[in-house]
Length: 450
Image 1: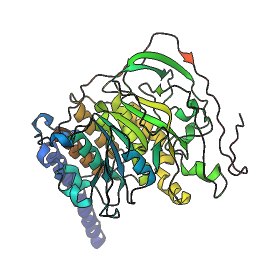
Image 2: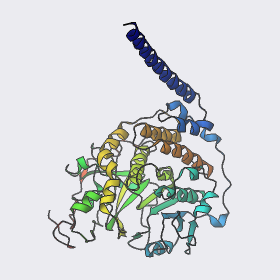
Image 3: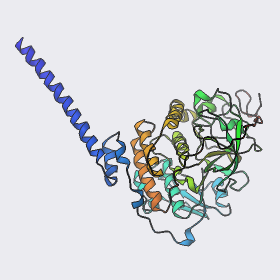
Image 4: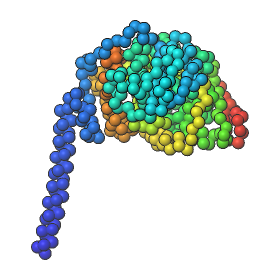
């Protein structure tokens, strides 16, 4: 009996000691993070998975500015791509567009002698010499290495950035987006959390990669406010040919060995999304105004098929803090997609299927009281890491990215919330002009079943 009581007492002592130790460890990390300075916040983020907001206070005004490049290296308009291939025909077309300079970001598989007129090639070795903080946070064989190209362009005078891939090319041979700061546009008149922009351009049965699956069957929105002096800060052009759809669509909406070749309505006007309404946008035919350059950052922890979509949702939410809009433009590029294994794409897209709707809800509910826009950006990146939409590494990357932006001369936009309703006039209805689409059992033909 006495022996049993001693064992019970010992067990209780061990449990109590373990609890005390856990409390001590938690308190230690909490205390450390509470008093962490911006100089050692990187180390702190590596030590703990979840971090109190006190670690996000950074004095952005104290960031040292780098010396500007020579004037003959400065250009207003930049195209950014990453590739592991020799120059493709589409890249050659991009390099020949008058008035635009191209940055090609290499990776370990990119030919070391890659060269093309009017292109700046950033080899892996060249990337190490640029002096950007993010370089040590970007894995090799990662689409996120494109971030180095964005910074290079901004450092070299960019006022406009067009991002695409090496299998896309502008339909007209020119980059046709809206280059004025503000203009008159149609803005969705809806309270819905998501809209499908493909429907507005005539493809009502197609949805973009990253669109919440649970919303596909909802009626499409087609009422709009016509608004003056709105800022289309980020502009996504829809793409004819083989557009950016998810693996579920590709596995169920076309016959085997048939290439998707659809068209969108080129006569439909550009449309903008109001605050609290979202749609996925990618990095394949996208135009950024200077005010939106902070939103170019591609995260490192999501998969290749998720990273640019998560970036897009993150950037959309932050646009509402600076009076900016995400916009969708009629088709102005064509893609003939490089060969992919659709089942592998399906596996890589798993988070899109499970989490897109949750992320949209999380972002529309998110708020920040920070008094500097860059602090709000960092605040959101940390919140997304805490909610496990991406990893802690992306919070680290965000801080380094924002630091690099300032160091290359980028001035953060001022806080100015985007208004919920940009016009007092009654909304107008824009019915989509249905376009033929791809279906199982019809081969390479396209049909309009509506």
